[in-house]
Length: 475
Image (cartoon, rainbow, N blue to C red):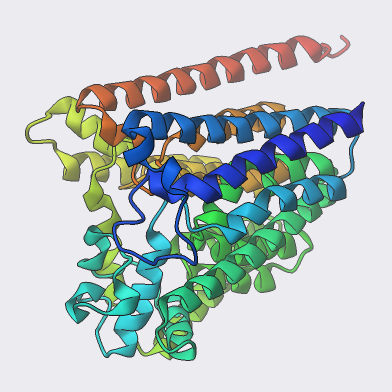
């Protein structure tokens, strides 16, 4: 019976990803420019042939089928299937995504444009790659990013520049190279998540199912080719090294991850505080914390300096937030307060304050919750209070909760993994753009409020059950 359930899940999921690979970009915006992939989509599956509403419905049906397939494999996990078989199923689902064009985001086309811009002596932190004009490698980037400077860390920009040089600025060759790196990053993440789970006494199979072959992970790392794949492929081994009592090596790997996306520096902070708390005496703790901070800050500064691209990226970190996506709680709050002149700056400042306060509170739970769970919750807090939220931003807490989460956290991951599959269109762009503001902002905040209240109720009930289960001391 277990083999039958697993086989059915493999078949349904492969059918879903195959449809998306064949028709996906024609249901979105990625074919605004011609020849952005090795083949054209089936003309019978385009919005012109099906109609916009029907095309979106077919896309949603395919994504829903993938979610059903994933939940079916979860039943096989309950029946004791091994992690290696789950990985095989994930590979089957991933094959069409690897062959097909990038889906659910156009960011990878911006990557090729950045590399070409640097190769043509454009400062990517001052100008968007669109200043190059009608250049082959730039034409795939969406208009917003084509004319915006990059917020990415200089080491990642140097990597893109190197790929552009290696492949003579050929768009498709650079896309394939980025995809190869992202698929390798996904496989590293899947294996390391299982290692972390085993190290903490958890189930490798549960970690592989919840993290490694999660549809949200596959669609946004394997197909979407987000640089989060590279960042997480460095951050997760860094956290594993910290668990293995190699905190300095762990910090260095997390700093390397921050060279891809600066948010990985959060993990450096958590590793440093965790390492310090395990020392005897305040003097030793302060010395350890200072050493961790010096190594982390020094390594990151050195990596930036070695690129020769300078520190201009720091002033661009707020650029992604200019899109004012309704999925972002801080933007949604601003539009609910005043739809005509939303107080964006004020709500984002409040988000930063909340992130700092809540993050500090989570750090006090290190001894009870452990390094991985605390990093997960701080990462989730940073996502929800940030200037912009996209579904792939949840991959960090998804993978970490998969490795170390308690039952309630794993259920939370299942819920958001399914819901967020429907949050973006196949060609990029949030589904919330299809609905008027501030109605959609009110809906987003309503869902978030219900989730927070449900979490608080769960915590209160769990504490009551725990207090009742604890026997009173003998008198």
